[in-house]
Length: 122
Image 1: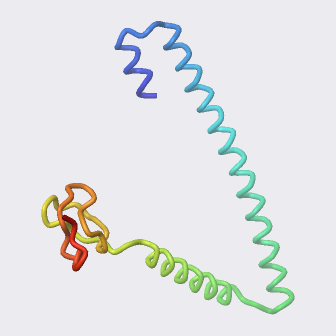
Image 2: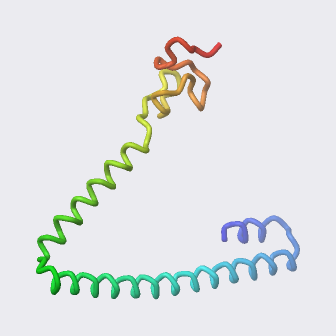
């Protein structure tokens, strides 16, 4: 959208500006259609989840507290898995940006890191 305003002030032809306007309108319409589909899918999944939970409660005599316990356990497992996937970060001694602790050199300024150890960059 900001491209439209930039182009309007930079002397581009009206045809180019009109095409970009139509492209932006189409992108907005496409995004709106995707949102509607996602809302419909969400509602469908919500109803299925409610039906499954009611079936489990009826058949297995489970309680809402049982469900909460399992949800908390899954949430904790997901948090642990996400933590394991994200690398530990350290601050570069030269440029002060955050970089992976295992990096031999800073991704931004190229400085050798403390963790480079035996395999220091030359």
